[in-house]
Amino acid sequence: MQNNVLILDFGSQYTQLIARRVRELNIFCEIKPYNKPPEDMSGYKAVILSGSPFSVRADDAPHPDLSDIKGKIPLLAICYGAQYLAHFGGGIVAPSNTREYGRARLTSIDGDEPFFYEIREDSQVWMSHSDTIKELPENGVRLASTNDVLNAAYKIEGEITYGIQFHPEVYHTKQGKLLLENFLVHISGLQQTWTPDAFVETTVAELKKKIGSEKVILGLSGGVDSTVAAVLLHKAIGEHLHCIFVDNGLLRKNEFQEVLDQYEHMGLNVKGVDASARFLNALAGEDDPEKKRKILGGIFIDVFDDESHKVEDAKWRAQGTIYPDVIESVSATGGPSATIKSHHNVGGLPDFMKLKVVEPLKMLFKDEVRRVGGTLGIEDERLGRHPFPGPGLAIRILGDVTQEKVNILQEVDAIFINGLKEWGLYNKVWQAGAMLLPVNSVGVMGDERTYEKCVALRAVESTDGMTADWVNLPYEFLQKTSNEIINKVPGVNRVVYDISSKPPATIEWE
Image (tube, rainbow, N blue to C red; front, side):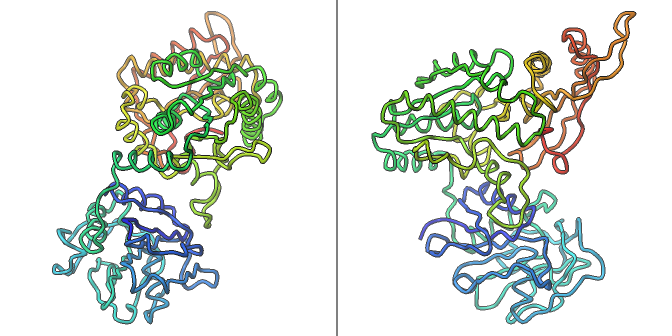
């Protein structure tokens, strides 16, 4: 039996956080939709049921078949999952008198229960539900309560099955990671072997077996994901990897040549292709964000197809797709989560390209990609590079895209990013950039009235981009940056700073 955890997703906003917490314990896990569990469960040593926006009492509530899981594999049911086991297992779930949402404290913990090993009584947990378990399922034994929730945690006698009505995966549950460790390691017996070294060793072996001596083409972006994917593939197949770095005319100032120079020193076989005019011509007059993304994706495929034909007998296309890309482009697992936006590197290839796709990082979060890159010997400066959107400045220029607007935003962006580096702030920020807004405002420069563009600066802190908070940059830095932008960039007379978190806002404005 393999050392894996299966997470069944019922549409909770926290499902991805469960996966992250499990991975932080150096245990591999996968998320699958509740209604499409794997047919073969032999590869999993534990199962976790996520929460859900649904009520178990609703007619349209998720209703999975757990006959191959419950009582046969260690099972942890969180929130909706715990209520589901109770509701369909002989217990009673009813509306709570008050919505149970926010911080709570554990009380009456069963101190002899391994599930709560070293968990303190009065430990803070996070609740998020409007129903509550009034009566436990058949053979259910209460393990903990809170002041407002009698059955905050329970187990089922005769099985390795646990249910909790709080979320151990969120930051506000202070000992949530320890609780998951108790269940996965001490109770379920999983080994903590999911490490960057182990990932590299396993993935390189799989790539060698899958690709053999066939040629692979990889579209490099200059970012962390595609760079780590390239080095990983190069380790596996060496000279059979052919990298293409396309200038879409929407990169940062001087980025095309700088990135080519950096790759040259890494031993990768990289060809630079200047297709900037082709991209900008295709974008002319388009102001819809999704249509801009689709246009850029289509042109990239055309350019990539043109270049791939120059690599004789190429059989594969590699992509630096990572897990958050997949989650945001389609629902996390094909479940009820909403699509936020399309991603340029998700969705495969058109039939005419006749290339098989390999995505070695598809199951990794961003911080895991960086750790894998460190294991591969990639320098910290490259691994610490901020994420940059595939469509580039096109989605940071709100409205239609022109060469003039690109030039303006490149200058603004350069001042902002270089300033972060000079002030020692760059590595304290997860992602930063500038947005060119489709509004003009009145200003005064010298003795003259101006009516020019407004730019918004954005800097966020995050772990993997799934959630993010704005960074409280020093006022002195913002003041200096604003003055420098207005004084040095013709066409801009106003600078604002974005203090929105994700959610509800996204990191990019389009």
